[in-house]
Image: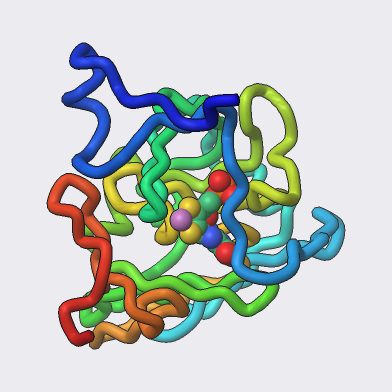
Length: 197
Ligand SMILES: Nc1nc2c(c(=O)[nH]1)N[C@H]1C(S)=C(S)[C@@H](COP(=O)(O)O)O[C@H]1N2
Ligand SMILES: [Mo]
């Protein structure tokens, strides 16, 4: 059984160096899968922003859109044209007030996972929060009820079970970034590992 396919030349411009196409959609989770009911789900905003808590109903009242995005895991698999539904980060940002001094954000997840982004990597037209995958409610193993998707960076930045956004003036490092992964993780530049090691 072949799990990975070498991309044909017609897809070469879609698949970053060192990546192979995955058949299916692998699950990549460090630790246990949190089981979070939408009835108790919350997304909190704090740090250099007006503190705010979104319930599931609050979040679902934000603008909704369809997305097709490529997904690149640093462990060398990629999946093209994943179909999602959810809310654009740029639309979400209209619903909160961020201090102009904020330059970074730490994403916090149920289960304790964290990952960091510079604001220009977070606030982008192509980035979104997803609650639906291929027309079905996002399965828990893929980050349901809600995850972030950041298509232009390695997928460890695409925080599953997201429940907090902490706006920061200075960069702080998230879980994998403290454990050897690159602070930014741009797949076309193969920013896999931190240069501090
Ligand atoms: N909360 C949380 N988010 C996470 C992870 C994790 O372990 N915990 N793994 C990351 C990694 S390394 C990848 S490749 C993608 C995998 O998403 P998937 O399991 O839906 O394929 O989620 C990212 N987001
Ligand atoms: Mo990953």
